[in-house]
Amino acid sequence: MHFVDVDHISKSFGSQRAVDDVSFTVNGGEIFGLLGPNGAGKTTSIRIMLDIYQADGGSVRIFGSPIKPETRDRIGYLPEERGLYQDITLERCVMYLARLKGLDKHTAQTRMDDYFKRFDLDAHRKKKVKTLSKGMQQKAQLIVTLIHEPDLIIIDEPFSALDPVNTQMVKDLLAEQREAGRTVIMCTHQMHQVEELCDRMLLINQGKVMLYGSLRGIQQQFARQEVYVDLDQPVTETFAGVRSVQPRNHGFLLELEDGASPDNILQNLISQGRSIRRFELAMPTLDEIFIQTVKGQAPVNGVTMEG
Image 1 (cartoon, rainbow, N blue to C red):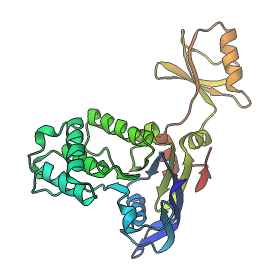
Image 2 (cartoon, rainbow, N blue to C red):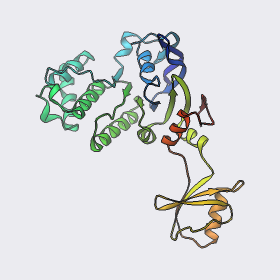
Image 3 (tube, rainbow, N blue to C red):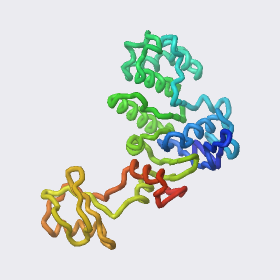
């Protein structure tokens, strides 16, 4: 089931076209990456989805229909800009926002206590929000986003201001949401987080769709004729089927000649009596694909790849 259907939406602010004919779907129970450089149109697209902005054209359906008041109770939204009340205590702020989401006092209290312990905020619950660090406020914002157990979670730059320990905690939490059958749309420009978490992705630049599909399908589309090997002995020269050899991450990157296949190279190494610790196709990182696409050097532009 598609939890979200975005159909040819556009939005302009004066002469600036922020979103230009963007379409995509988000499936139930997946983590979907909405990617792009700063100013690409990611946040504007989210605000159109949430009916904060009215699109100039196109339509959005959430849970199969246009967004309605009752739909909002099934959505958790983490904006890039923090929306916490600064002059009240953390405990009072989270409780107030949880009650606005429709939770009764007992349920809100129980869930808040659990989250405070998990996020190491229990000792800070009586402090005013404005006295907390940026990282603590980001964790509090995440609690507010998730406390009512929404079916659809939309998070804009969720790892902002978090140290590595808390970043891993949030990644584990998002994976748990997916395992529980909830759907996550993650808006970010941190490609390595997308590689770790997302099932599918959409890359937009200057308001236009550049890449859309499964992570694996997109990486395969950009894959080069290269394999990565980790052997018992260094590769000091080329051999049949290999055009060049480069050291890479304690192993070697082998660029294949035209017509050579990874299977041929593997058999060749075995025939040489090599002890092979690791052998794999060298897939480009999402960072490399992102840079190549945004610079206008990508071979695929605005094409759906659902492999």
